[in-house]
Length: 381
Image (cartoon, rainbow, N blue to C red; front, side):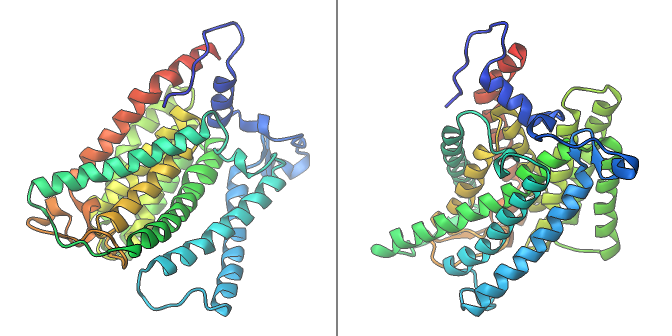
């Protein structure tokens, strides 16, 4: 599954060039003919084109406008309904709304930033198909290890098979499409556009300000559902990112961006019903692992595959709650048992302490499989 590595030579390998262009703050190479700012133009235009803050603001506005337009069209066509049930149909069309909105917003921002296309947002790089497929395998296997550990410990009980005959293939395909969209949307927003854009325009102090704003918002609104998981992630990233800033380390912007995107990823999950602090922390932690996957593979395709397969296995194959939300049309039937700290309770497997071990296992696997390749390619660059 590893990218093929060419022997070292005076010239950098194409794979190394692709990864370095995608992950470092010198992404200006992908901006075609960025104009020189004049007068007060420096407020909007920087050395590598449109400044990151303005880019994110424009993207957010476009995303909101496209989402409202697509949602209105879907409601008019009776493709989505506000019935409160999570079914393959509701999940599929519900995720199609942000997916189409994200594509439209990304395409326009890429055009505005004079990039070749929206794939510039962490979707280029070597061996994309192979990385996507290995991500699918990692996501399914990772969730299976977690379910197996819960079952072995007596914290998860299996019931009868819920589907038979043609229903197995039908719901497997429907949920597969739905969770592929989930993976594309969440990774497209956080690990593609936002991670890429923040990397080229953030430093420790901006990152610290964003982290402080997130924590302040949670404190003022006193939101339940595991807000301490967000606080924990914000605190864990503080010292490493500060040291990167003080040492002016190469790639500091990428890791400071990863700190922010991972914390925000945990933050948005506080809106789910049934979440606990472990589930929120786990969401942020897996977000960081997905950032690491970009660093070592050169693109977000592994993350997209892993995210989609993890959710598919959790919701459809094993029939457990996903971020506190059970769904219709699952293959196996399971129910939590015993101490909530270990079983996850209503949060599902992601709310169990055991999920942290599985996330660590995914991280180690990434570094073992791809880390050496990343180091060798960096040496040849």
